[in-house]
Image (cartoon, rainbow, N blue to C red; front, side, top):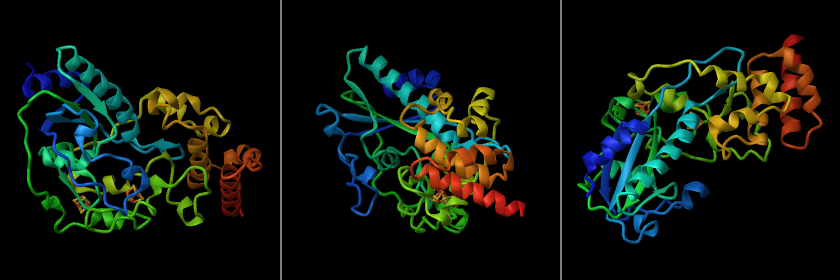
Length: 312
Ligand code: SF4
Ligand code: SF4
């Protein structure tokens, strides 16, 4: 029968540098004020696999991308998560091949389970930090009927490194962090619906990013040991703003997955990134998009107007 140590050795070549396990009892349900996506998550691993005895928490580390002035950017988390999701599914299949039941799931409340398993500590930025990997990890979950050696920590105070630090709260341009480790998701830039125009005050906050916002991670001293890297060349090419504004966004699917690489999501933010990065050379493309249905049309018009005002 597989042990936790054997699973760790299977997980490492798939990019999971930390693996912890907790038992299959439920965690606290999602608080009622949480985002509706969070409300959809289950707190009970046996809702995923009735025979569950253990829950595996897997952490795949990643390095943030070095900003490239004038260019579009994407939060490296999404690229890592695309790979981590696929590799966690492979690991579940490999465990199942030994005769155990193992289900990879994205439907469980992962952070409370990870804290209970001793994988890391929550911070004021609402994110789990895993020792020196910091918050730069993609977390994945596998529920299994294997009776693994589990850890079940009873209480979970905020990371002690947060006691005298409020850097993430100061860095958040949307004031979405409440300071107690919770997040007002309605204010968070990352969670704004793509089918509505972004409020004008938020359009400057998205900067060069076409997906995500990681200012509360960049500012966090828990990430001090995680250096930046350059984007892979092929990703940088797919992020070319003129390509994105011309409608050539599908080159991002292999990097971000179909769920995150969606036309409206990427082109909305590419239009804003053009203004935020001062790309007056892209005015013709923005003007060509200004008649698009909302919200892309209004983002393109705002961006063109912002650039023209700067030129006056
Ligand atoms: S992701 Fe951005 S907007 Fe959301 S809490 Fe972090 S810094 Fe604030
Ligand atoms: S920035 Fe400071 S307060 Fe915020 S999560 Fe990191 S250590 Fe905690």
